[in-house]
Length: 155
Image (cartoon, rainbow, N blue to C red):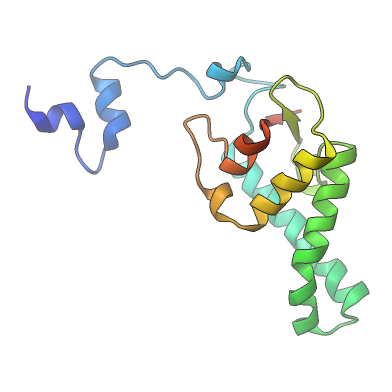
């Protein structure tokens, strides 16, 4: 076996090379004890990003109409604040934002219970920094979720 076969090509990546060598990574969420499909399984990345866009658009509309009173520059400045407040209030009370509700997602602790207030605030602050949310593990949990012991699951 060549060294290249052992580490994989740069196009395939190391995971593909490991899978060709017989390593079984399992499904997303298996290490966390979550089901593979259906309710309670790890939320797909596309749905999570879609929920984020829905929430951001909703916050933009609120900032534009209620706070900035039609001023586009003012709305851009207030959207982040409205998003943070919306996230903390909705995740802290019902475990999902409006976008997550529309796409049938929920944020829970690893044991299935609701996140506490401090965890919701920390998760929201890390989400606003963007980088922690863009770095995932093999279960597609972002660093903002890992920091507070949370996971996004399907309803």
